[in-house]
Image 1 (cartoon, each protein chain N blue to C red):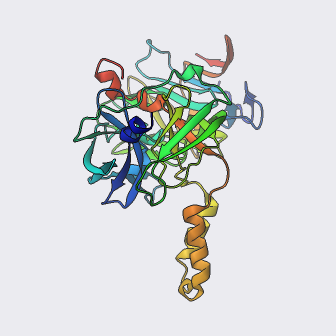
Image 2 (image 1 turned 30 degrees about the vertical axis):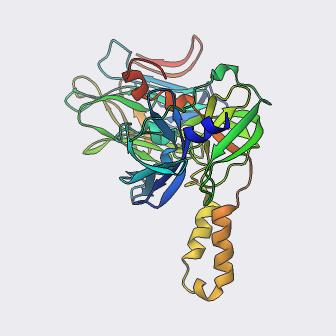
Length: 149
Length: 243
């Protein structure tokens, strides 16, 4: 049974830096499991800075690029385009976009594919919707906000 | 120290993009550091993407001599742009250079010295002050990133960009003095729009005042970006040794 949660603040206080995930606000997002799933995305706030790391795949499940703290470490034909408020990862078309609103809310846009080409997460009307686990929304030390299997 | 400092700093001139700033030699390998915004021309396209063109005609003037400079960092990576540094090589080998301070030892209130070529001065200008604070500021290029920054009361104005901020006690460099390249400054954008308004020619004094304000007046502390970002560039790692 699908569960919809909106307007929650998960490990973040209103007015603090956060990521918007499915209309919820959180300090942390993890899609996939590092070293287990071929794709992986970690979005965290460290030293008051939004940091996104991970491995992005194309719709055929092939590795597009690896990100480490917002910088491309390895790429197979995709490039990064900086904007004033974030950046875009492109492979011809837009793959993924990070956009910071008023230095506070970080929006993640685009489509995250799994290793079989399935859609793991996708932005729909400006909201990042998580379609497939494993995923973690919110984290503080060893405490986890919401875990999706 | 004076002559060594003078020979280790230079005025950077980019004829093709109409920019100038300061820079300095760091370490014994001949690398010359300046700000990215001194050697690039930035524009924003219709999609909001930042486009950068590096100068192809970079020259550095040191003690009355002019040397050709070339970029040694990877133009296709955005790290230098985000952290506002550029690393050049000159067609000269300098024996005068700065060493890098141990940044973990730097503290508020320490005396520092800024060296650069502000405004239209052809000689290096030295000014002394203290570290007013060590703060984390948003990158003036990209709001996503934050930069460790030394606020200082040393004199830093247009043309100082790219020069060294050094610790007075041992002459080691701690930061790159930087005049912000304020693409996010809405007030500045508004003033720029006024300058291009039809009919502004008829109000010449107003236009002159706006242009003077845009060029020379700044409010707030001067600052220097920590040298750690330039030193963290892969070019130093790929050499397999420090500077």
